[in-house]
Length: 135
Image (cartoon, rainbow, N blue to C red):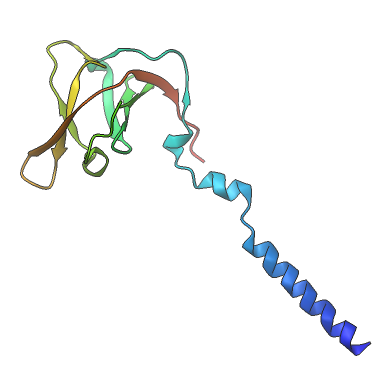
């Protein structure tokens, strides 16, 4: 009788430890960055108006969000990685139009070295997105 009494607390401790080690699905979802949870809304566009661009947010070597006046957000996913874009988070462009288009080229600006420029890369289409509410 004494043995079974000791075995029950040990078995309960093992079960409690196992429960702690199993990650829950909600904690895994919380680890996904907010920008990766964006949803496409509407059709992609070839161009956006320069005078409506409020700011940009570079996420990685291929993904730039253009935040527009009025609250719209357009995601541009470059067709190829643009080496250093995600690290530098800065780029420049030249256009003779009042629009930035999928046919335009951006150039990575290296911020740590006196205005040096990195590679130039083509843009993709501008996909309107909605970001999830901040939690």
